[in-house]
Image (cartoon, rainbow, N blue to C red; front, side, top):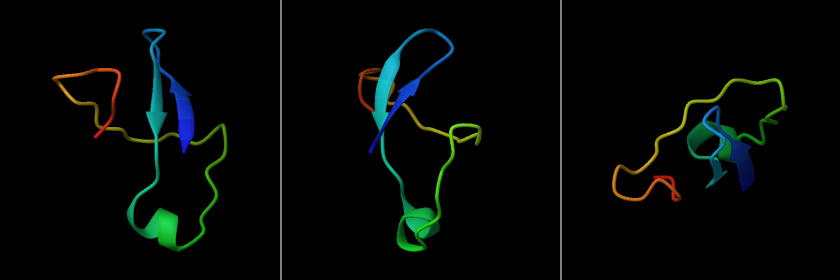
Length: 46
């Protein structure tokens, strides 16, 4: 699990899925990631 700081100063908790999680691929601080955020509760991710 990772804490992400968004451009709008929000802090969300994110986690890995799919091939990245099962393939033991490392995510570095300089990597760009795509996230999905719930429209009902922006404090939780989907």
